[in-house]
Length: 184
Image (cartoon, rainbow, N blue to C red; front, side):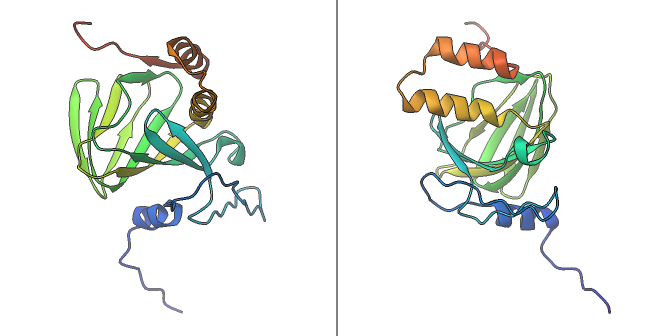
């Protein structure tokens, strides 16, 4: 039997599989016929509101023995995190919707729908949705575990307990350091 290659690139198929629809809180229904098999519908995932962005944990580090996590992030126009440094994790971004500006050290990258950006740990970086519509990225974080930062930030914000002191404390726990803008 001959197999025909499909016209859809593998990364695009992954993005389609992991895109999520509007939903409130939902618990992933993970199928584990073998230790490595994970299947989630587009509606499933753990949802967090993090400082203006909506993040859905699609595959958590607990599902991958800590090897990686996959999240979907919906970022409003002009939204994105301040410049920061991860001491433990590399990040891989796949732009599903919108246009983004990534800064990695002193390098500026404009990424549009379909682009991939890999940000190795240890260097200051940030990203910003430079579009007029909400942007969506699929982000693979290796190793896993940093999704706990989003869960903790969201939980504190939900209880009106989130302030600079709590963010600083969580940043230390998760090995991330925010970089002050030059001149401040």
